Length: 355
Image 1: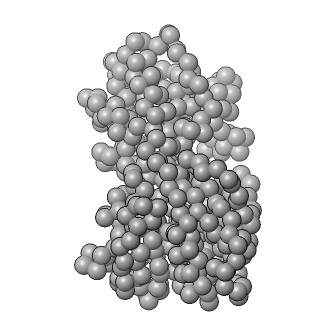
Image 2: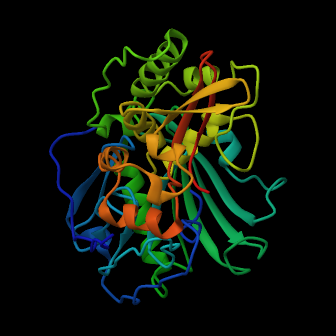
Image 3: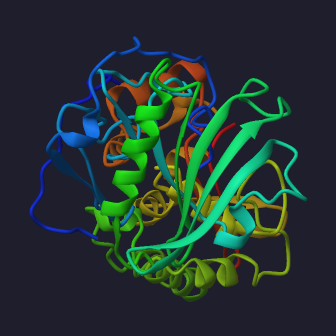
């Protein structure tokens, strides 16, 4: 996978559609060079649009933001050019913006229940007509940021979650005061659309067709899953997942909240719902587990060894994966991507990825 460079601006005339800056994806930290640029709040601004995340905002023309790729667009902003390597925290960037699927009141730190930060100031306000909180904090050293690190974080009610934007003394060394001015101006320009019907299936090219040779119970469940995923109806998907007699597997960590798990993944820029639709658009294989027959998508998952996966099943994977992914499956020795399982009686038993 190539690493796309950050570009200096993203301009759009159309409105489409948390954690701290050091709390992005897991991995090594990569800190961009510090800058001594003048006060950017007095400069012209460009508009950055995150269509899948449902927001747009303005940022200084002299600053840079990330394109879609490793992270969702409009996720990071910095006064110097930067790149985001896969699997890194993208720490050290001046401003970080993300959507957290948790409600506003449950995300905002309060003086009596936050071990990670000391709340220096907290102001309730509105952004784009929505409830919002601006919090000034100092790290206690019990989380990722070093003890004593100050930060300003905005929390904005996004309807089905909270938009979190932050800057800290650990981001853009030597220009924290200026970065605070920039993030305040960015939040004043923020506009959020209704995301209740937005998710990654909006990027799906699959047009699922009826598979008439499936048993009626399997076909009905498959159709119900596809319809709910295309509608971004997390509650319906969770209802379908938990309706069976046995346990439903959506992660290797257990638990009984698949809707929240998928919402968090979507908010982090992953695309589980799009993958779910595109998997079910392919042809399944079957396997017998005791007296029960399971229908499996993709068909490649039914084979324990990658070398045994027939050519048509491998070709079917190309709708979702590139050559590098297929090589990784070959190196691992089997298919370990997302897969779906439905029993012959119509129980949806898993939708999970990994080994």
